Length: 81
Image (cartoon, rainbow, N blue to C red):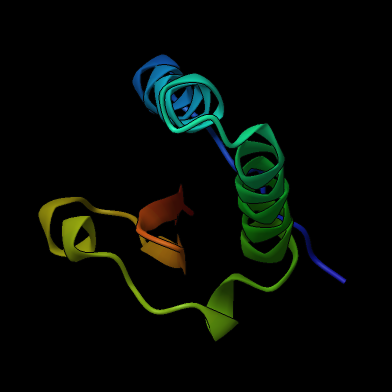
């Protein structure tokens, strides 16, 4: 089976870390923050292993390569390939 490299930009990583920290501290829901992080990790795995089962991201039309997305709660995880 072909696998793809899921690239997580520094900006995206920072945004996820900020959201997870907000949920854990400001919303006082560390378990929910942990679950969300796990779901994001699973979405990245899905995009790496089965990208074609995920729809194209809106950014796809702006670049010369394919960008797929997997929505987790209200967070969109994208994969260029």
